[in-house]
Image (cartoon, rainbow, N blue to C red):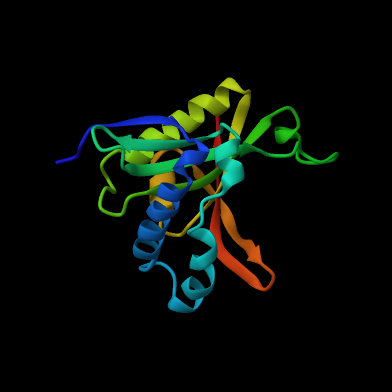
Length: 174
């Protein structure tokens, strides 16, 4: 049975527990959708928490009631304004980039990811974000689609020189 949980803003004190959650989750959840040749290069990079996200006050964690164990996390950053001459439908809109979303691999489909993203969308909306961009893993595409995100197309996320991670760009218009 799923234990109750609460969503709160992440703090720097969550860094180690978040690293542990990412290291447990990503290898297990991504295994079915990515070949070992990609994972062996990408996992050492993507299973590390981003201190700048925690410091931004735009990153949230789902914490199990009673134990304090992290069950999920995710956040957003504000994208740079569209360049001059960019598509007119984005000129007046503030874009938020969904960032580093994770759920405990033993707790998927328990509403944790949905609760985290709901909190992210609400907080970003309070900052004027009206469009959400997401570089989803192949694994998470159905999750984001169920939340109303649409597929824009394939993307490669540069992780380090010579290392790119295949992703799917998705967008939610608010």
